[in-house]
Length: 128
Image (cartoon, rainbow, N blue to C red; front, side):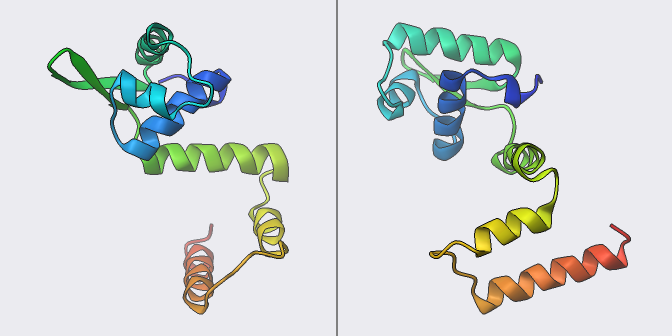
């Protein structure tokens, strides 16, 4: 699969729709896109994404093809997070977390804080 950071703006929008929906037809994708292009343009972009290895055909329902992301939402999320960390925070997780927590509307529940601490402790034990 090619690097998802090399997707065009519209290809990224389509992938976001597919990850949010899990799977979708061209008509569903088109309806969820901002300033939607024609259905033919969406079909072409889906074909391009399929050729790049980002999208797969699940099945046909009547005349419509159901498409899905080739990569799981979790794996794609990790890849996107890695890219954001590298691009905006020099790979520093602490800086990204600090940026999030210093927002006025940021909220961290006791359970979330405990989970973060547990993950930090586990990473230390494992030498990461």
